[in-house]
Amino acid sequence: MFIYSPREDSFLTLKVLSKINRSFNICVDVGAGSCILSQYMERLCKRIVSIDLNPRSCLLCKNYDALCADGLSSIDRADLVVSNPPYLPPEEPPSDWEALAIYDYGLINKILRWSFAHRPELLVLTYSSLGRADLIEEAAKTLGTIIIKEVEHYFFEDIISIAVEAHRLRTFGSS
Image 1 (cartoon, rainbow, N blue to C red):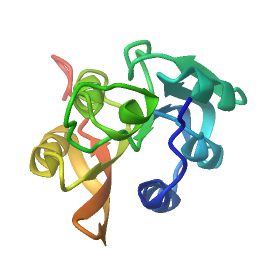
Image 2 (cartoon, rainbow, N blue to C red):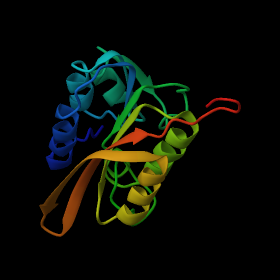
Image 3 (cartoon, rainbow, N blue to C red):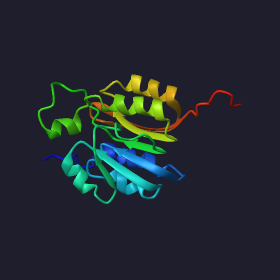
Image 4 (cartoon, one colour):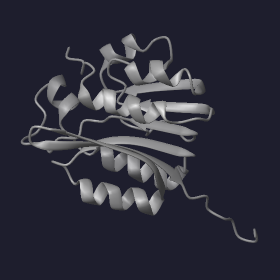
C-alpha cells in the first residue's frame, strides 16, 4: 500500500508550523500519511489526532490518536488543524492508494467546510497553484486572517502553505 513520503510540500508545511509560537490542546493532522507533520506538532500540542484513509498510515501513526477516517468527519472540535492534503486536480477516478494520496477528490473542500462550521483557532493548509488556489485563498480569507503564507515555486507550479487564524463568531447578546 502506497504512503505519501515527505516531499517539498511537506517541508513547506513544516516551515509554516515552525513559525507558530503558541500551544494548543487538541490538534488534528488531516491526511497524516507518514506522520511527519504529527511528529512536529508534538512541540505545539497536548493531544494529536492523526487522520488518514489509508490503514497503513493509521498504523504508522499509532503513537498518536490515529483515526482511519475520511477527513474531519469524525471530529467535532480541534484547536489546530493541519493538512498537506492531496491537492493536484484529478484526471480520472482513483484507481489505487497512490491516486488517493496525490489527487484531490474533495478533501480540501471538506477541510474548509469543517473549519467554517467548527472554527479551529488555527488552520494550516498546503495546496498547489494547479488546483483552485484562488478559491482556496478566498475561502481562507473569509474564514479568518492569513497570518503566515509561504510560497515555493517548483517547475510548473507554486506550492502554497498558509496559516489562517479563524475569526471568532460572536453569539447573540455578546458584545
